[in-house]
Amino acid sequence: MPYISIIVPCYNEQDTIGLLLNAVYTQTYPRDKMEVVIADGNSTDQTRQAIERFQKDHADLQVRVVENRERTIPSGLNRALQAALGDLVVRLDAHSVPSPDYVMRCASALEAGCGDNVGGVWEIHPSGDGWMAKSIAIAVSHPLGAGDARYRIGGRAQAVDTVPFGAFRKSLVERIGFYDETLLTNEDYEFNVRIREAGGIVWMDPTIRSKYFARPSLGALWRQYWRYGYWKARMLRRHPHSLRWRQVIPPAFVLSLFVLALAGIWNPIFHWMMLAEGLTYLGILILAALPSAMKKRELLFLAGIPLAWATIHLAWGSSFLWGGIQSE
Image 1 (tube, rainbow, N blue to C red):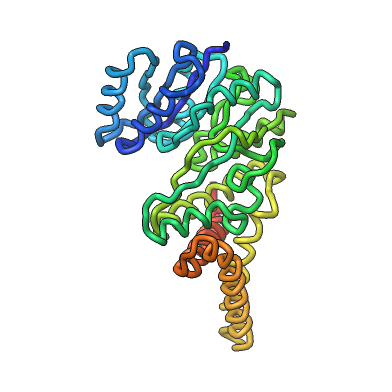
Image 2 (cartoon, rainbow, N blue to C red; image 1 turned 180 degrees about the vertical axis):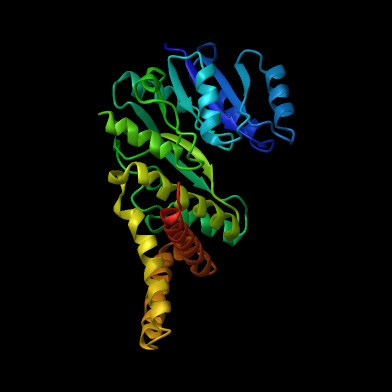
């Protein structure tokens, strides 16, 4: 069996780093064939202490910490990659919880030659028990919130644009380079673009599963998708051919509202057109949320899910436009 390095960028993850390490410890892959390399961005909470307690209580699993002074995700991934000893690399996040056979299935897919970077599906869970947190979890796993991103909505095993996290041979980095440290978000997608440009395959296997906890509030969801949209636009400047239809619709919608609002200053008919567009949009969202509300028998989902979708679309679309006009 090949030796595997599990790389984890980390900053102030005291509440979740233990969940990840315990999930790694209970993997079906042999512990003496794994190491965990955590790139910590000088955490100011109890993250380091939690890691040290785990190391003390689980000495049969190699866990190492390297410094990530830049405190960004791509820099953390690169520092961990530089320290990794494994032939295969599995990239995880400090707030992820991989299924017990996650590492084994990643290794099997790589050994079988399914792809150059392989990953699976997020099982999206709410970050709380309230109806809004549950609404957000449903929204981000629905095509109206995720587009055709297979790692969120599932599907058969297939070649895809991107996968969450991902597992690859360390030699791949020698071929295409490290993660782009100028992208504070979207570094995974850009890494996968370069794999595909080099003739490689990004492979999604739905049996490779990990838990992902959605944002707990609309404010947190807005901030998340504002980052996503902004850095997607910055990434597309370097790889414009990687643009997908799902990435065009939100900024087009936001732009249409802006243009109609502006035009309405001169002619009120455009304000009526904007109102009609908004009401039509709202009606579509409520109708799309109806099956989930009925299935879960939760009337508040008819408000929560559309609010979450609107937050995703408006935040992503407006920040995409903003990122597109910003200078490098």
